[in-house]
Image 1: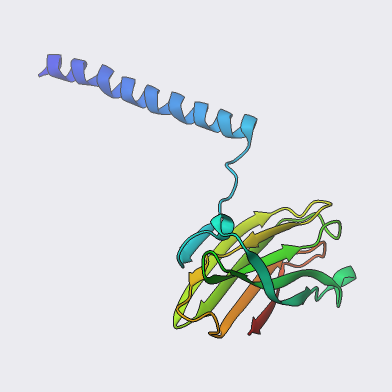
Image 2: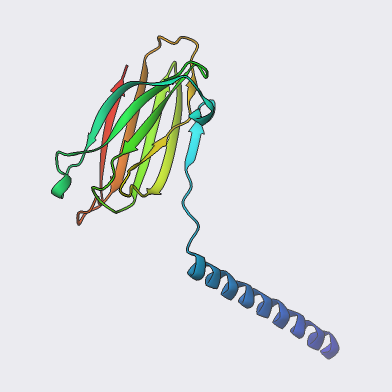
Length: 171
């Protein structure tokens, strides 16, 4: 029994040592390179509109700030987009740049013909030139169908409090 016990201890110690070294290396990698960038999460729809051509903006509504220096100012816009090649609608949020430096989480939904597609984009940086985010598109049976888009922008927008601003439109 004592022979088996001494053989198993070095294996346990080796496994523990390997786990500790792996954890230290992983922590060092995160410290040196930074955490992995947040990625968008899409659900529903028929695909990304990046492959669609013949696109146009059907309707636009401004998204206004609600606090601090941005209260009442347009900080971005929500767009209902259409593509003839994909025969579908999607939502796009355009964030204006140069107004605040804090990251923004964008959630958006497009609905039409009883179907729904959504996108969640955490920690977007607007920078000086702004940025945009979009949902998957929904292929429509009838190009005249009513479509609704809705978006929520969450950040502290350069204020002391984290809050959400949004917009909705139906066409």
